[in-house]
Image (cartoon, rainbow, N blue to C red; front, side):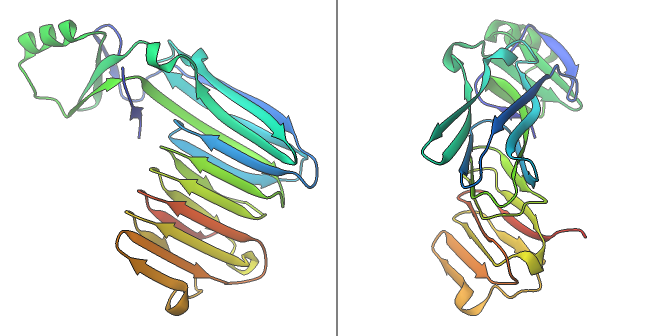
Length: 248
C-alpha cells in the first residue's frame, strides 16, 4: 500500500506500479554488548532480521514524488553509551512540492495544483474516480539486518514491521502499521503482544489463554512461553499483530 501524506505533479497519468526509485544502502559498525534502536516514520514496510556479522545493514528503496524528491530522505545514525540508534528523516518536508493524486482503476492521475484538477473535472466530470489524496507521494521500503542476539528495539509510526529469521531479544512498537512476526516456536522463550484498536492472530501451538490473556476497553494483551530462547514483545496501537510459525 502506498502512503500519501500531503502532495503532486503536472497532470500526469501513470500505472500504479510505475514510479522512479532510489536505492538505500547504509552500514553501521556494531560491537558485542551494544543495543540497537531503529526508528522509522514513513517507510510503508520495515523488514528486520539478524545475521552473523558485527554490523548493521540498512538497504531498501525510496520514491518521493515519483523520484523528484528522493534526496529528501536521510538515514541518520548515532551512538550514545552502548546504544546504536538509526532513524530516518524527510528533510524540509513541509516545503516539498505537494500534489493532488486521484486513482482511477489501474491508473494514477497526478496534478500539481487545484487548477489542473478543476480543468480535468470540467473535461471528464466531477468524481468518477476511486480515491483522491493531497500531499507527498512516498513509497519507502527498508530492510535491516542486525547482529544476532543483540538487544533490539524497532519503532515504526506508519509502516508495517515484518520480522523474519530474527534471533535475539526484540521489542517492536508499530503505531499504525502493525506487526507480522515469523518465529521458531521452540526457540522462543516468551512472546507478548499488545494492541488497542487492532487484533492479535497466531498459529502457535502454545496457549495464550488463561493468565496470559487480558482484554479491556480498547486494550488486548496476550503472552505465552512456548520454548527456550529470547523474549519478543510486539505492540501496535492501531494495527494488527500476527505471530506466525516460521517456515522450517
